[in-house]
Length: 209
Ligand code: PRP
Ligand code: URA
Image (cartoon, rainbow, N blue to C red; front, side, top):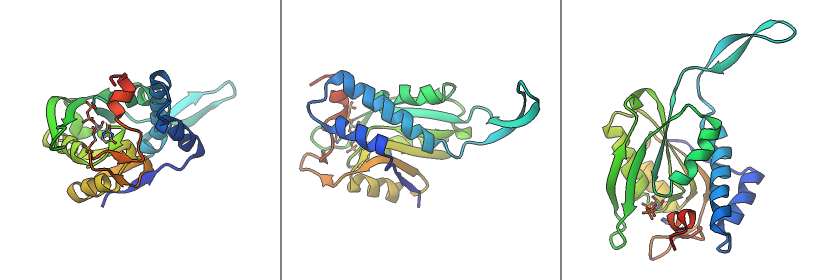
């Protein structure tokens, strides 16, 4: 079973509360998604391999650590996942970025794929799929499946809010995938929206409703 990381850091919890507020304007909402994603990057990259490097400080030469090679890929699930990319790239500017386009059919709630462009060497990278919402889990499971089909072997999923239903779906279908979330909410409503959640993440990031 993949590990689950729930971020309880006060800075993240504070920012998440503002994010959930229906009166938070689109500009602030975008900034918060970026900031929270940047903070979450810290834990999701904890196991990145390091190598020794010789550095000359003003005092002497000594051996220190630096990141070993280019080992990461970030894959936002369009649209809402796009809001999480810039904060992560601020931390890891050399990461490659793939894109997976999926939307939930409004009636069936099943994910519909409309775009997929991924780094060629994704089999050698730790691929981090990012999407603010893990609701039924349909979109995340489909995104993971797509990456696996293209050869990815090391996949993590990073979301802001998860419902128990979505967590279970990913854990059942993809027990090898670690899940990073800033909040685990109560349930889904009859429309498969997360309760209490934050509403429609894509609409709130892009101001479309
Ligand atoms: C949202 C969200 C996830 C999906 C989660 O996207 O960004 O991708 O719903 O729901 P699920 O776990 O039940 O699949 P949406 O389908 O609204 O598309 P959008 O980002 O284009 O608005
Ligand atoms: N997608 C969203 O944007 N929000 C939800 O609560 C569920 C799915």
